[in-house]
Length: 421
Image 1 (cartoon, one colour):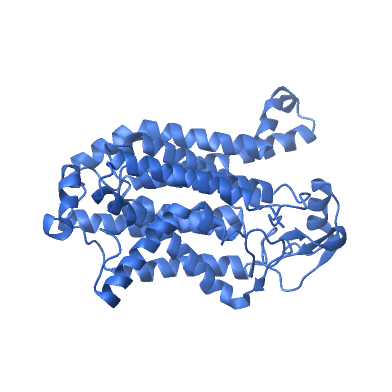
Image 2 (cartoon, helix red, strand yellow):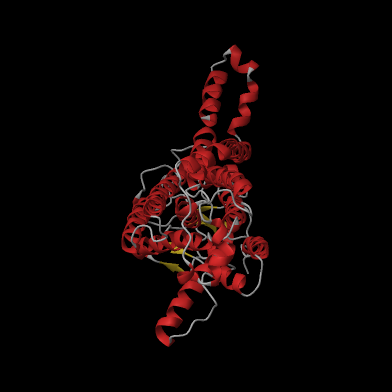
């Protein structure tokens, strides 16, 4: 909405309207940094305002978190038994405040913003069904794993196909033929070339040899520290994208087991990707940094900063001892959104570093299950790994804060790895 206000003012100003000169301050809404900051503040403020009301409503509806029995989790039941009945499904607050903030401050018609929003809402709906089923049946099972996987796959497939096949939108990321243009250091000139001199769908660029900008397809993937993509997956990019979205969604869901753990790690991961999205949409002149340029990617930073502000606001109520849990409603939506951010910015493998805590949690479960099925022995006292440390004597707050520290460090490492050798 704010950007539309700017456009309305700009048209009036160019037409010489007197009121436009008086309201020249509206020009500020064209700046991405301003709108991203406002999105963060709006989402944070809305969360603080809505939090007590949402919590009271969830309590009145008796939407309490089911806790697994002592027979299922043994000693962990003693540690977490007091949390039984704490309101869950707090993810509706996260999704709601992000949506409002993006509608106010962002360009919802931007393809990257639109597809990320779609994934968030689609997986948030799945999480809502899962949480509601748990509350209704008063157990911790929820919907079946098969149903959950099929729903995730459908949402991820739609998003992946949209990114891969949509070549008709200005600034979209797919092209069938490579093109080369003379590289100019000026970002404005690069944007002009992208807009005028070449087909509009050719929008992803990396700096190549001899100062030339080379087109990069969305199906091409690279790894940190290397300037050029190492592989063009072609149509295999679609299942690759689906895997990333589903994997990230489930990884955040597994991390959401302690008060504020997933929320804090989400904030650090999103801030790192907000920086990447902003740079990717504005700068191509850094020859020693591997960030593919796309003029529309910077708008994604508005969505990401809205998620940062919303998660900060949720953490206000979710910190230990938590007054509300995000539930699968929030964790599945957040994870899917983070996976989509990684795809849109062409930093898929960097997600392993920036989101290391999420990856560590998911891998611990895979190793635990695999070891038990193959050898009949467990590697950890309990998986996900945050429960392992709890059972080894760490207090819940120690686990949370130490994992936050790891997440912050990994976010910095991830940004540092954008440097190419």
